Image (cartoon, rainbow, N blue to C red; front, side, top):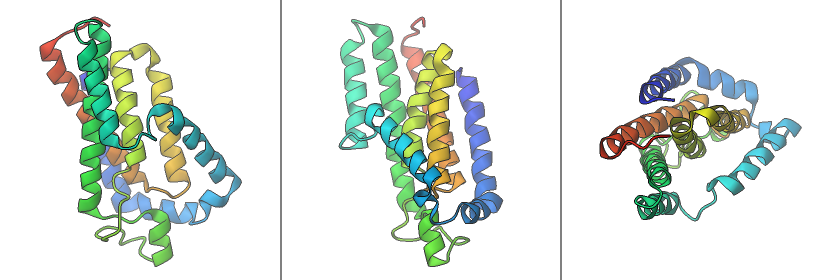
Length: 209
């Protein structure tokens, strides 16, 4: 996956986000239903994501700590194992932008989760709530940042990396924890963050992968 590919992914995800907000989110959330998480399928999806969370760094005390650890480790390894250091720094920067900026956007948009919107009867009016933290998805931002970094650095393993991201998106949307546009917005943000960070780092060093 190249920087050009990442920008194309960001553009496509932004389009899906716009379409989701306008015409897809509410009907899809209604079709899934407020009790989707309590079904056998919902419990299975949640269990899969929980298992992945335990090995992906999602359960670190804070997103800032994880990003800082990646960047610091990358800087420490930069002159000893440049390619490894480069990869860790790229992952840390991408993750920091995706999660931290995404977290700030949650407060700006104040969107209810689908289950909350259904319970309150505001599925078509889910933005602008003081307690809304659904848009964009933090879970998807975490995995998108890691998946795009891996796909960029190691094209041969891009399929499994992106497959894990796909599973997380399906799981979060499939139990009405997030709207489709919540997930696609995080994908767009992470793709832009990865492409920008990769372009900047490429001006510093060009490791051969």
